[in-house]
Image (cartoon, rainbow, N blue to C red; front, top):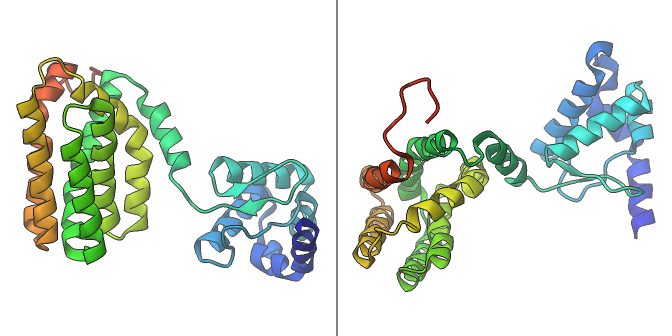
Length: 263
């Protein structure tokens, strides 16, 4: 089976010459151009997840570049999560996922107070608008999933690890209901950082069962507005949800730092 796929890749030599557009690539940017041409083909659907890519040798011959340049281009695409490279096997197109973005956020934010505070601010910028879109675009199937998640949240009140998973699922479902692939990828990319924040937020000693129920009620209000198809109410409910967390954020991080100085 693998040999048949490799032969199929070889048979596309003329297609690769067209796709890579080798004739009009400036010598000074050959590696970058190979990356751009391949990513464009993946984005516009000419190359689909699972499709084999030409070998380093084929890319080098087609583009008139050296094998090391072709190899480096493939490595960069692999680092971006765009292709899968395995020693001794044909490189293949990967389905786009949030992995590279998640790694970036973990590196950029770490576990510092300043980084986590910035992650909270970013969520506050994004999620109210996402909730409004969800209210405009939700389907009956979307709503059913959201109700199931709310039930999970209610069943896990006070159970920090289980609650966090249900809470993350709720916010990811709201993103999915916006029916925008980039929105979903953005929130999934932020998830490892958000998880750190949720652990700190939900593990506070001062958090009572009444506090848990109030938090659940805020999520229920967001869900209600989305189900009713009311974008303004959904956005307001999400803003209120984040605003209600301000006291806890101050408890975890202390007062806002002076602008320009990490907290």
